[in-house]
Image (cartoon, rainbow, N blue to C red; front, top):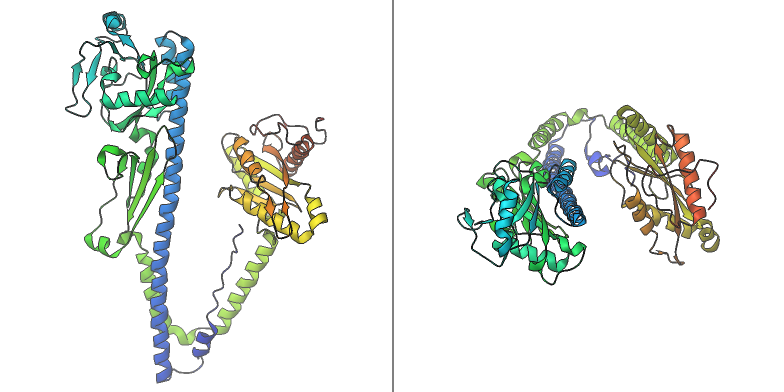
Length: 545
């Protein structure tokens, strides 16, 4: 919502009456003023401390949201990547190492924070010797083996068995990881559990976190390939599994950018948050003194990643230290209060009052000129100023941005049937619902009576609008409930992209307006905005619905 851009800094009337600036201090008056000065100084210091604590708490909240978004994005990418790789392997029928390698390299090139793709194939005891001989040419010294992850962490030969699930493909072959080829994942308890869970659920499942054989903390996503064609009778009769090895420090690198005083832990939810066995990634905070721990508070925030394939808990701990307080501001407050004590007789009351009144008037005028008084959103003046600056930045940096026109359907009927007061309540609620999806670098403005304009931030690529438009449309699914009625309001959305649809405000508005009316005539059937580069009807000549 709109910032007020002004504050009421006028001193209290009672205090101004006590500040008799035109006459020398009498003894009693000096004592009263001294008491007032002490009270004000302590109050300001308490306010500074409270503000520091409030900022610290807000920062933990903000960091938690940012880090959870980072973890969720990376986890979803890894899940999507292994699904795509599994589908590709399933489409080949018989594993083609060269094609699998090319596809894995393509995924790793697109998502460099992913670590390693692997394929495990079911091999019977009778087929073991033939497989080892056949793959020796591609992987010198290939043989089926096991690794003691939880114990002494050494490679061992596997005993004769009815079947094995050795890794028969690995990309990339990094230094120290080439020995993984031939690892029988069925021989490891926690790898086998993930295999079974992946088979039962028919989706990717992560192992518990562990120390990778080649070093570093991580986990492995499993996906049964056979689910994509036909379901075998049991997990250990499936022909192939694909695996995506994840190195935590690479996948969730953003967590390592936490401020020095903030400790970050990402753990598997099946473990206690303090259990080192469940630790996916940990970045400790810089130590503080015992006095800081005793006097200053600690902020903690736990956030849950609601993803069945990777059920993690993100914990942030911030033990405040002296460095997190505004010591410079505190010193400045003390110095300023001393100066105020000695210079109070020279304080120009009329001048200060006049300045404060002028600032008040200026702030109010700015608010009236730039913000809609009903909804609190930006008005046309503010929209034009914002869009001119955004277009200038986009031109300078070669970026793209999108303008959305949002128009309420049949809003005139609301005003006609229920009155303008009800219509105003609906507009206020529309502004509130839409604003929930607004990013800090975007703008939502009330353009006219029932028209709103959304301006996205400049980006190197044309932003995908499906998700945003769907979210905005969903905000109109619940009825708008007022004292007079429960109303259902439709919405039409049009869009225009810079520089494709126009290079100035007028051209962009004309194109977005035409697209919006095209959407309105089609009744939104199939009118989802697939992305910002979808074909656009020419302004003034929309296609027939």
